Image 1 (cartoon, rainbow, N blue to C red):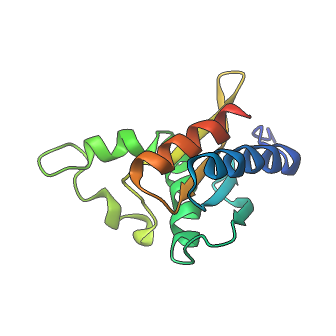
Image 2: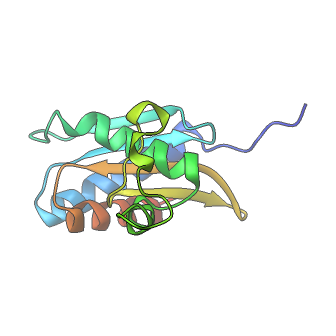
Image 3: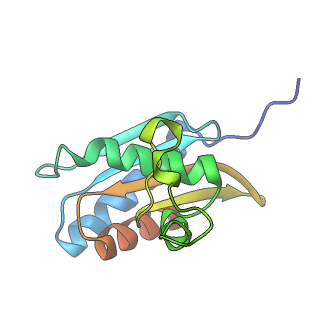
Length: 136
């Protein structure tokens, strides 16, 4: 049986730390979550003062990015009324997040996991998730 490549806990912790550093830089406490190749949570951090309501959102942004192999920001563009994925947010038991803050993580041209960030504006979430993903 062939096993899919996946990121490690060490990878996830490095990604989260980079996200935390960027969130501190922008001055907005965040939740940062990393999922593996199967969309399962590997690690999550909620910075002091970050919204508790954003815990699930960060995890679900990471899940969404892995489930559809797309950034949640790009998914958002295609999930607007009249677009091809309109209504997708109600799929997968409501776990699909269609706004900025989720990115797939790739290694050797294969997606091996994803990162999700929530707790600020869309611009802040996107800046933090990009910094987090860059650490991978």
